[in-house]
Length: 151
Image 1 (tube, one colour):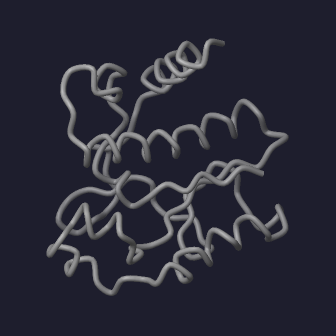
Image 2: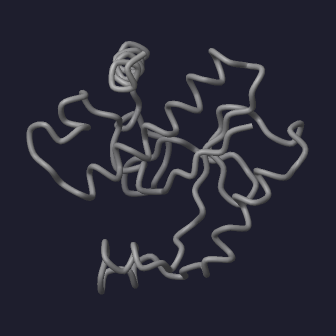
């Protein structure tokens, strides 16, 4: 199995065109993070389809109190409370790596051992389409990744 450790940061955007995702036009650290984390979720979905012999999942460790959160949010991290300890954040990831594969649904995005919505929007954080990529957009991302890897 493969466990992509994504983040709730992926909820901020869909995966953009390659030149934007790779900061060829301009750089915004928070958006770059969001694009990378959304890309991991898309990889788990795509490889679930293309390689069903492997279990592919992505996950969110919850808002975990790390130096990276301090740097990214500063005083605003108080709005993410309650924060998890690093151990609490790692627990769900450890479970995904160690549980019987039959307990997992390949391609899903997990938090606290359960699949979660991959797309939320609006004031009440309900299902939304703002962060959904089309199949053609994911095809383009996959093609660009192959080129970047020299495949």
